Length: 286
Length: 316
Image 1: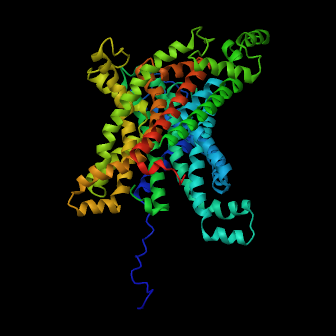
Image 2: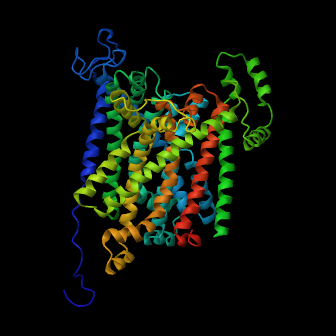
Image 3: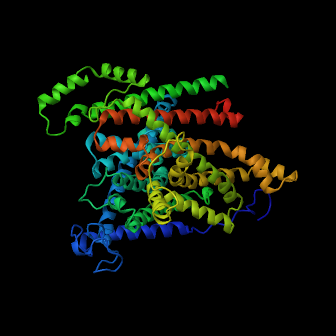
């Protein structure tokens, strides 16, 4: 083909490659999910059993693969059951944030200038109450518990979704297929559901992954302060809370729960970053 | 410019007002200060009597105006749990927390700007990849975990630094630094890692632009071009992130103060929450949120000082 308009320099189509970060993040998340689900069927020991004869022992001692904590509970068991708390808090918190934040974001992106401006100002104000602060407020009002943490973290994460979804919505609204739908007489809500929602869904998924990491951090911090999971609810943050008094003579007590929190946060961050690169190649490597 | 500052000032004042209403509603209306102060075992009569004593039987508007009017004069009332006035304690503890937060922020910037620029200039090469990976790891470390780790190594293991406590800087500057070093690192290094990623991304954005190619053509090396021209342009998005991060650091101070037993606002907030001292929590949260809003106001103004293009604000 020659002549004006010939497609000579069309870039080669990039193979749809999944970034390595998605694989690594995904693998770690899969291990955590497997540990959490597995703990319903089998754990090395009972999570509440205290091996009084073998308190705070090290690796591979008396049948405790990762040793025991100060009260003699099996560390591996606590980590597995604790994974449930971590994942569950994340699911509920991110669920609340996505379910409330996505429609609000679409609304802010489609609304006229005045109402949209108002919504964004409310979002700005909302952002002044980050997850941990919101959780502390609700813990003061209702008492600290896993439920309080989940709800507080979820509510505090809403504005992050509103912002991301609004930006995506505004982009979709300038596209020709939305203009065509308008001309065809589709109503606002119909456009929101048929055209905007499917197009901002990838953004929501990426944001969910990042928000999940933040939720895990917030829950661990809260439980570490003794304001989240109670004494009978195994949680990684709670394990760190119980390990803190022993910091001066048994610093390794915090190693396993600390590593678990670290791995989980890292995994969800990697997953989010990788998915973002995959969905928006322009941002790759940023 | 003056009009811009005035406008942003107005936004700040309105936001602070709205935030104070939210804080009041969350803690005084959602919560029940009288019942919480007396505990679950209290009789209804006792709770009702305390409600009258605390002024909770008045209309919400009167209660709010009474509270916010006092707060503006630094009078946050007297805690019904500790029986101590809240205002003076807030001022004392705030100065401690500000030392912690400002030190951590300075450290974060000192880490992030050179590393972020380096990571951007070396992007795609081994050095850049290593820097990105390290900052990625740093982002995932909770501040309290870093604190616990640092204590176990440098205080418990090596015995170089005190494990916890606080010394007033005017009394003993050396002791103050020794006590603050580990808290600063645990809070600042992690925020530095977060910030490194933003600096890298902002510098990368600028690297592709025409003006940088022009100054390169005029004979500047890549590094010179970035340092003299790129940084100023990259500074605006980084400044904005810095403002958001200061809030994160302020909140992060809660756990770090808890780990290091520092008598700041953060450890007081955690204590007050576990004591269910709603009046104290209300005062602390208001202070933290208003501080956060103040920071973002200052950042906005600073951004328009750094980047004259932001001064007209026609596009917003």
